[in-house]
Image 1 (spheres, one colour):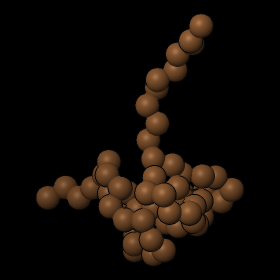
Image 2 (image 1 turned 90 degrees about the vertical axis):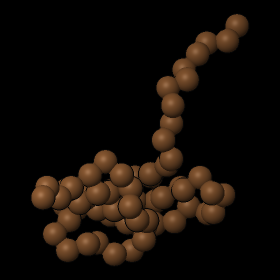
Image 3 (image 1 turned 180 degrees about the horizontal axis):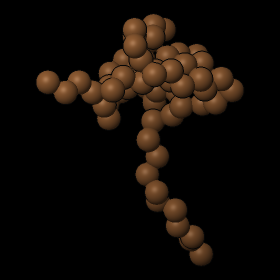
Image 4 (image 1 turned 30 degrees about the horizontal axis):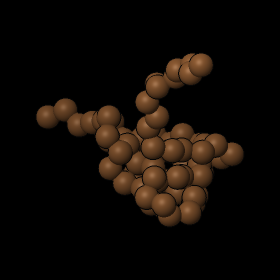
Length: 67
């Protein structure tokens, strides 16, 4: 059985796209999916310190030049 790697991004300001105010939170990623936005770091997770950075919902590359 192959377990997905767990990564915790800690200390970033999180904008979740729901309209809630930005907050400092821990984002836990398992494999390629976000599984939790909260305050706990799971045991054994790889920790990425993101103090001073902001996490937002995905942006699409819709770059265009309008006349």
